[in-house]
Image (tube, rainbow, N blue to C red; front, side, top):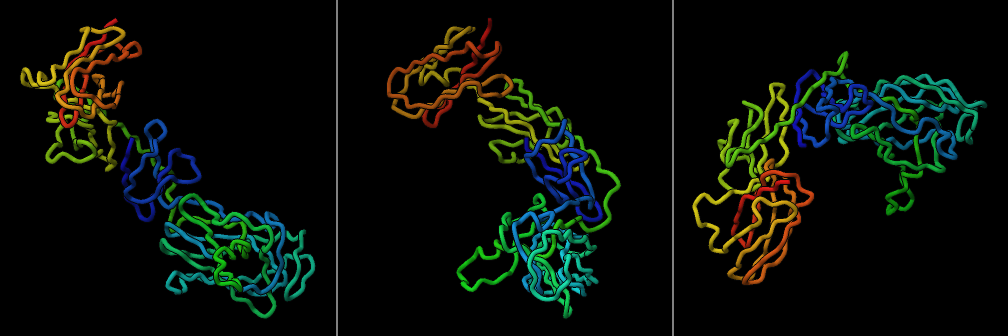
Length: 384
């Protein structure tokens, strides 16, 4: 079932399958989705996205060291975001500043940290890994004000050093759903043709805490969606919604067909989309409609015959093809479901086949015969 979900608010709207889901399946004021809600219900939250991205500690990878490394961290965000905090490993104390630049090279956010050493032995310059270094979580509150790519680059005083991994690094891109990701870094290889060089390094910010910008809603709002259902009476198709309807044929909107009822003028796949008071657009399942001949004798050019009538376990189909052509046989139930569908070639002359109906529920069906470009149909009844 295809749905369109819409809403408004001061900031970014996030859509969830369940009220307590950590990650939304979609975001934005207007969402088109095939994701099914729980009991036809979705949940909308405003600016309430939050999560953790990147390795939790430096010990996730097998090795690294401390120094005043210069590469920047590359990240992508799909919505305005704030990097609240991250774990840093400090080899020697001092002051470090992180600058965030956008894809145009403009600095959009900055933070300066008085960093206390977390390494067991404090020494400036390049130092080996300290397996006992537990690091420390620092508040960053770095703002990424719009969707796009950003680079986070450190600036050091004379003494402070940071840790980075350079052994056993795997996992790029580190993703938080479809909203935020650490895509890499701008470490430069000696060989310019090596486009995967950056994947061997992870820099500075571990266990990164991210949230959407803006004030979060206090609670998520439940949005219950009722799916439209099409019923058929002859050529009349009826929606179970009295208003807000738009009828479609083979996926294309039918001009002016916005009433509760629609008279089908040709065979095809019919659906109806309904715009709810909430602004959500919901769509019905497909009803496969076969137009019956309205004038006596229109199927006599092939002499289409089916028997027995009513049928039990099988239906015999006979007709005469004037020329060899492509053939498609379908048996369609009263609710539009195709229960039998067979494509083959038909030679010129008499044609006959048997359709096994032993597994079909009793009821009224339409046998649809498409021979070349022509369509024929007959009513078939199954009883037991």
